[in-house]
Image (cartoon, rainbow, N blue to C red; front, side, top):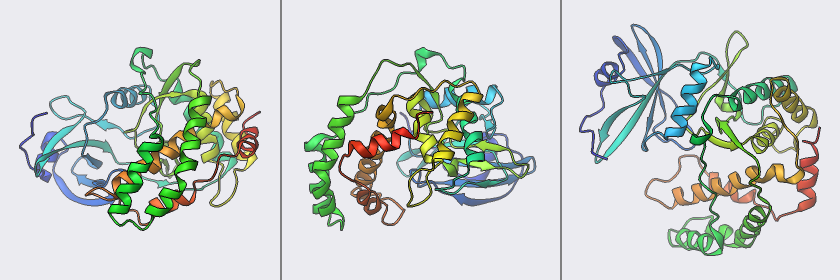
Length: 328
């Protein structure tokens, strides 16, 4: 792709997206995967969230986001550039930076580990609405999961040791466990179910509780195809798990009941429900290892160490007990 050859400025931003006269712009937050973060822009026509990315937005994420907005799903309003594109591009050094603009949402995001059966019911209903979005099945083509395998994990461990990372030995010692998990997931993954559109990042910090009590889902950048059953299972457990404690059964069931009440169909298949959650944990660990040994390490202190401490040997009995919470 050609370089944009345009430097960032507030004037460029407000002109590109027709945002009115700028008043102020401040750093408003930063997620775990986007170091550029979010800016809050105040102008003569309103308040806007400005998101910047070092990679181009994925087409499927844009399609799902657009479908959600057109159906009136509770989310920030995406704003198009004056040329009709859903993003603008400027140059930073030798690289392009993509910019997305949304209406600002007033409210409070939920904290990691927040648990409330009442809220779980509402989030389950929102997930059912997302899964029902009118996105053509021909667009919902997911990339197959590719495990690193023994060689891939050993390469990462060797690189970490060469870089002097203080968690390198821990990673090396965990390799047999990581490979065992990968082999188990490969052997138990099923492909006999259709995929649906999903926001794929329905974690508590991405749900804003507005002052009127309604919920708004933000951060659609990871949206894409998902196995609906695995998506329900994953987030039913996420929204039911307090910090350092097992999932609470009443919150898990409230999530699933909310999903069904809103038209979603969920039938547990036992421990197979947990495969996506396991794949995500392996991917997230590998992502953070790669990032920390690169020239642009992660900005969350000790995240990789925490992730490695959460790697435990495969225990089918533990999986069965967790999956039993989903069988309602």
